[in-house]
Length: 170
Image (cartoon, rainbow, N blue to C red; front, side, top):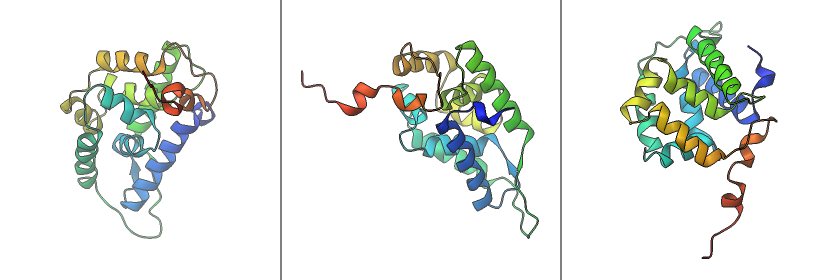
């Protein structure tokens, strides 16, 4: 697992997930933390993809928050946060997704596709219960991403650049 092969947004999501785990006194970093961080990202692609599917990101975030509330908490000076097995599997699955797209970096959408494509517990259930399916997500991703590939760490900022910085006057 090479973290230098993650895009800036994916690295930010993992960092935010780590901080979320710390703020909730969770010892293990889980896919639920990662999904919550992806949903909370400003200008992230996750919310845009879910809205394109007709799914309210706040609904998914609420389900994830409930799953996070159920996780055990620890306290004390030695409460270090460790990367859980499911998160390692998630990153490996996202890496496989990026290779299928012939991308050079693992990005946020690869993490989201991995969450939907394989069972990662409550995080996957939250997405599936909201109606997110892998085939529909792939179509939405094709609409948002177009034919662009992830060839640099800042590739996610380039998606729909015309739509972000212009307004259709017709």
